[in-house]
Amino acid sequence: MPSCHDHLPPVDCDRVSAVSILSGEHRVILQVLAALEAMAVRSAAGDLPAADARDALEVLRTFADKCHHGKEEDILFPALEAQVPGFGPTQVMRAEHVEGRALIRAMGEALAAGGAATFADAARGYVDLLRAHIGKEDDILFRIAQEMLGPEQDAAILDAYRRIEHDDMGDGTHFRMLAIADRLAGTYGVARASDDAQTMALLTAVCGCRHGANPIHA
Amino acid sequence: MTTTASPVWRDQLAPLRYLAAKVARVHGGSHPAMATLAEVVATLADSQAGDHAAHAALGRRLGELTGGFRPWSGACASVHQLFLGLAAVAAALPAAGAEQA
Image (cartoon, rainbow over all chains, first blue to last red; front, side, top):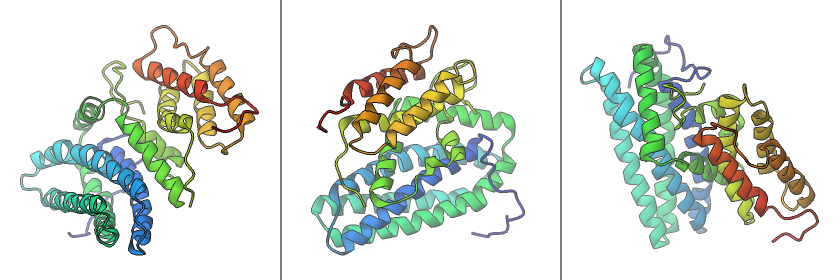
């Protein structure tokens, strides 16, 4: 993917927007990836931390894939593709989501079979894929998206995010996943994304309560 | 790397740290106690294991800041959810001086 968009401003995470919400979630996913990387090291040495691995997979399946990638694939990407039919960057991202799901399945199968080495391989592959993927989104796609989306589109997207988080996922699921991610961070000595006030604000911005017509409490 | 199993109240409290932060930001202007509540929740969530005296004191503070875990009239679902959750946490906290379960 071309990296010719450095002239565009980075994602403005001081403002709650369709892309800053996703960038905030990226920080939690990176937190879980760091813990998963530590689990891969242990697994490669023959010591598969099964309970922690199950928790990590739950966060990756629920928070990272169903919720976060759901927001991207079902809401943000179509909004961008409507403006630019055949928009290349989103096609690349969708394909990488598919790769990621395959690696999550591989980790799950390895875990079920007690295959420490196989788990380590799949986990390392997933960590490398997602780190690169997140870098492309934050540094390229989201900068472009930030320029493409007007205020009304942004508001509509944020309202759609609320439906995913609170209606589709169920109230409480989002924060429960964040709590699991924090427990893993504590176990593996990883920095907690929500300790950054800006990130905490983004992670708690989408509200299920109908406070007037605005779904976002910035 | 730590692998000690945490007491039940810590697992209950962990997601409430986020909910308390949200409630503080949304309602802190009209209900300033919510900002303090979020700080107390965060302090309790990050507190040292086994410090029962501190846990008990923080639990009492939760009750004080929430008016005995009673949401104000017209409070939204998030406030109700938070107060309900904190009531359960406070009930599960060991008394000061108690042996850790």
